Amino acid sequence: MLLTIGAIWLPLRVLIALVIFFALYLFAAKIVRAFLRPMPEDPDPEKVRVVSERFRCSICGAEVTMTAAPEGFDPEAPRHCREDMLLVVEAE
Ligand SMILES: [Zn+2]
Image (tube, rainbow, N blue to C red; front, side, top):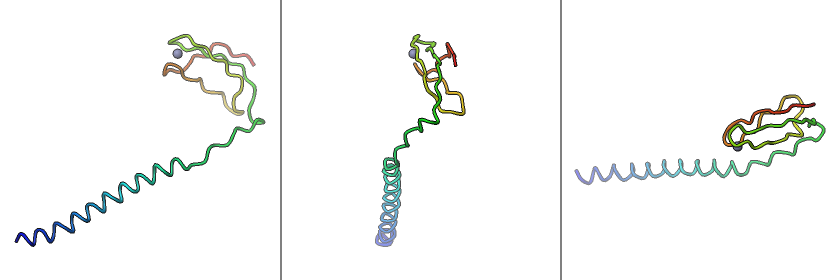
């Protein structure tokens, strides 16, 4: 009886160990693959337009002037103190 349980339990433990091993392997491979992703290319200078927008942080009062933005859509407000900064001046 004891021998029978041992005969079943041992292959089951090996199977569980193999499943855990492959799960950890796939997880590690996914992390390594994320590091191997190529760097994004530099933006094309001809597709950047000149803007002049000033943003202010509503929490601490810091101000930022944006001088260039990608062509085709309005730039999003940068974040400071974990909040979106407020647009103060827009002059184009
Ligand atoms: Zn701030």
